[in-house]
Image 1 (cartoon, rainbow, N blue to C red):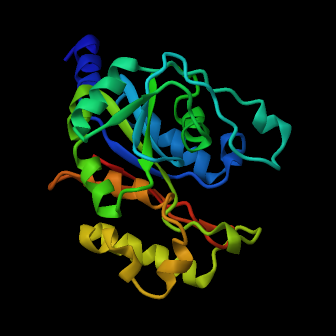
Image 2: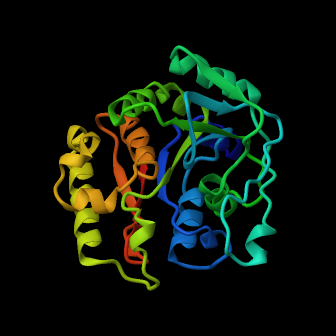
Amino acid sequence: MNGNAAAEQKSSAKMPVIFVGHGSPMNAIEENAFSRAWMATARNSPHPKAILSISAHWETDGVQVTAMPKPRTIHDFYGFPQELFAVQYPAPGAPELAHHVRDLLGVEAVALDQEWGLDHGTWSVLVRMFPEANVPVVQLSLDRKRTPSEHYTLGGKLAALRSEGVLILCSGNMVHNLRLLEWGDQGFDWAEAFDLKLKSLIEARDHAALINYPKLGADAQRAIPTNEHYLPLLYALALRGSAEPLKFFAEKVTLGSISMRSFQIG
């Protein structure tokens, strides 16, 4: 196979689905095990034609998808160094992809957003994975009115994108409790135990248990006091084919109550 044929085969390959535990936005500018893992994952994956990101940091009433040609970089945090606020991620948008996503979801109304942009759940990861910002990016919101089961169903409807060169990035944290956050590089015992419980359920493909996470025991409420950081996980799992491999590429709980566990499907 010549070089051109190999490149064409790689670009036409079925794209993976990536779930990233994004954690602190400082990962965008700090050299650490997490940022290095994100970079390595991008290097070892087919290059996408576009990216659809499902971020914990965009909750809406009703489903929305960004449809502007030039999404802005949103610095949706405070108390961090000016160096972080100076980061811009000028990736182009993809209005045609936004329309396609709306058609695939097929729900009663998907709003084409012209105001939001790329929040740090998206750009703090992509600035590591695709630092040249030359891949078009669209964000899909989390409809706060929908149940976890309904989010899982929506995720499954996006499967066709993977064969169209679109990388689906799901960005959240499986364990995320800022009220219990404690500065340090280790996790609380309960957080590490619950993270491992989730890992075992993912490996067992027990999606029903993961959807019904409040029934997973006393630590579920501490690990998931609100579910916006958990829901992107369900979108990723809904997109896993029956014979597809799943590989974890980050497996640490840090800051006491933040799981950075990340994985790739396909």
